[in-house]
Length: 348
Image (cartoon, rainbow, N blue to C red; front, side, top):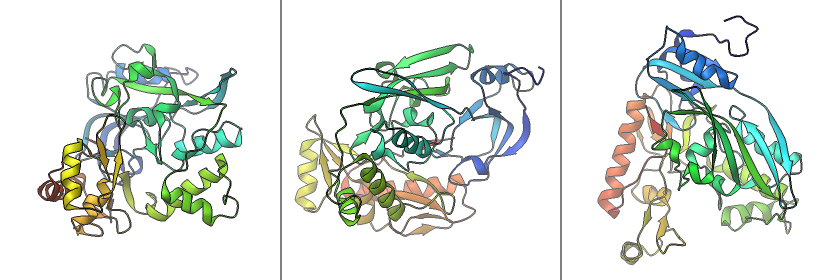
């Protein structure tokens, strides 16, 4: 391919992936490519040097645990761009390329006058990863603001457009983590941001942060909520650039009403969130903390001292060490509460 070809690419052999995962795990890829156009994904996989090899699509690397070197080709999503696609009487439709930094995109929507994503501020990762995980925080899930996405089917090179029903969003879950895993590379996502904006500021931490801010006190504006979310997350969560981590490592488990009542009889202070279907979501961080894991370490893998949901790499931890710590936590929570914690990150 000529360098004037928009689908031309550079394949790099034996590439460290340390800078491409927020745990900072120093695994290596046999081959590596930065994909800057949708067409490059399929073009790379047709290259004779990597044809037939396993592939790994990487965004910001904020939801992955690398347990080994990857004997295949790692495709780093580097597509950029964002725009207002169109608007109607009800909403703005805003599109962002999959390689855009998520937090920067949320900040841009607010600065452009398109509120609605402020509760999801400062979540690490890229726009393209947001639908895979159906990211959520402080009373809002991405699925509530999702319109559609474009993706490349890696086997055929064809571009597909999927709506919310086809993405099959669930709690920190989607089609892309199940049947669609390893089949697609998301290239762009469109969000529907309602013009009738209503605040989501019911979480106690957010309300306190707003009350303590002169700008936010008594004013639940999109900017005030954004600033409060950023302040709370910075106070509780370590910066991956300073201390390797993947954010919340475990999903909040959901139990039926009978199990919840039995647990609450034993633990009156149990932190919980009733669900519309009658089940109850439990705070995984609270369960882990009660089992005595906050701040504990197993070698270089540790539980953060301010947030028990966050596992960290104190320097030199392998993916296997992170998983060993996670399994020890799961065992203790299951033994004490009969609850099985499920990891959020994808393990490779």
